[in-house]
Image 1 (tube, rainbow, N blue to C red):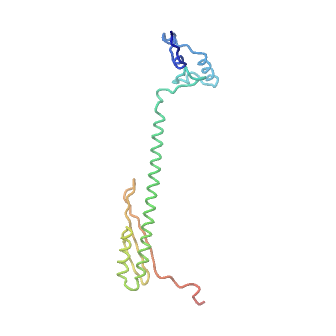
Image 2: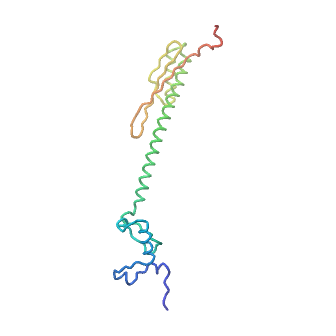
Image 3: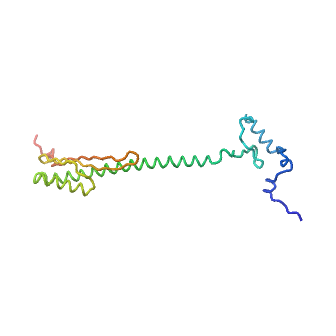
Length: 184
């Protein structure tokens, strides 16, 4: 009893003519070739394409030289996405450092202004302690009458650009008189 072949086996079977090197075009392949020439493609323009014997009308199989190109495009796209993510992380890190140094300067200036009239030396010492508690360095403290001027700094390390120092400045003192209390 002879075993019947499946449709897949029949589609992939090599005919005797193909074994001899006389690969004749099937009617489907002729239709596909005619469809391509009717679209204005010449045999020179389709050079390098391999025609599918199993496909529909004029269906082309990927040239072996083009295999893996989608992988390269995928890797390039992932690299681009990583570069964009790194840029966003760098900008975010710099903004957080700027807010941190400015907030520490504001708190230090308020603490120094509170003690400015009573003890100017202790005011700057208190401002320095508050800056250190906030993770920044007090670079300059200047008490003029009731006003405290404070400068702070924070060194940060950023990818690509290296180490940078972020500076903050703040001024605090007593509020001026309320405009409604001034006699005209």
